[in-house]
Structures are given as structure tokens and as C-alpha cells.
Length: 124
Ligand code: SF4
Ligand code: SF4
Image 1 (cartoon, rainbow, N blue to C red):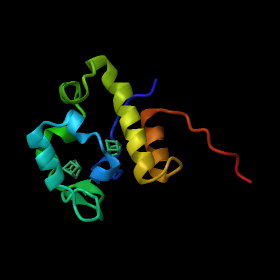
Image 2: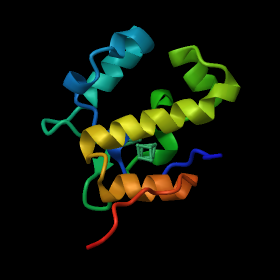
Image 3: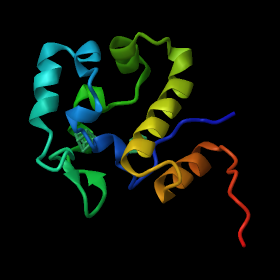
Image 4: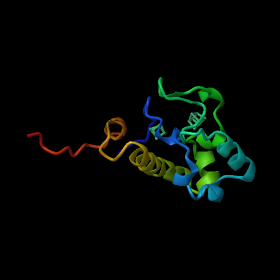
């Protein structure tokens, strides 16, 4: 069974462009939405994301909606704690696909980290 984990130097979920997330109002409270929108840089990436180091500059103090935790995801998406693992995996796969592509190095690294066996095409 695949076990969710965040992969260092991925950052796909830190690409916050609201055009790619039309349903923000469905899971963020008004004040959270205001904070979220204030964090979107002109390039669509979070202003707190260091694109060179590929990491969050405020990780310890990141907003609640950035945290993959059962209580947070329960509040935002109405899922039960036992659903968190599969739900988080789907979220990451969707976000990594959108930002980097489904055959990207980031996707390969993520799937390897969570224990999904890779179906790579045979090399010529
Ligand atoms: S998309 Fe997933 S693996 Fe990538 S940084 Fe976000 S939580 Fe981590
Ligand atoms: S605050 Fe940090 S974890 Fe949250 S989106 Fe921005 S860079 Fe990513």
C-alpha cells in the first residue's frame, strides 16, 4: 500500500495560481481565502516559496491550509482521518501533474517515495 509523504524540493502545491484552483471558496473560510490570495505572486507561485532552494521560507509558520493533517483536511474537504492517506496522494498527484507533468522527475520521485511501483516504458 502506498503511504503518503511529502517529497523535499517538490513544491508543486506551492504553485497557488487561483486560475488552476477555481473551487477555493468551497474549502477555504473567507479569511483563509484572503490570506491565500495575498500569497499568490505574479508568477503564480507562493511568495513564501524559495524557487531556488525549492522550499518554503516560513515552513514552521505556514498557514493551516498548507498542512497535510487529518483535522485540517477534515475541516477543508470533509474527509475522515482514515481517508487522509489516499486523498493526500491524489491531491499531490493532481498538483504535480498540473505543475510539472505526469511524467516529470517530480512525479517519479513522489511515486517512488510513497511506494508506488513505476511502470516505466522500456528503454531503447
Ligand atoms: S505536492 Fe505533495 S509532495 Fe509536492 S510539495 Fe506538495 S505536499 Fe509535498
Ligand atoms: S506558505 Fe509555504 S507551504 Fe504554504 S504555499 Fe507558501 S511556500 Fe508552500
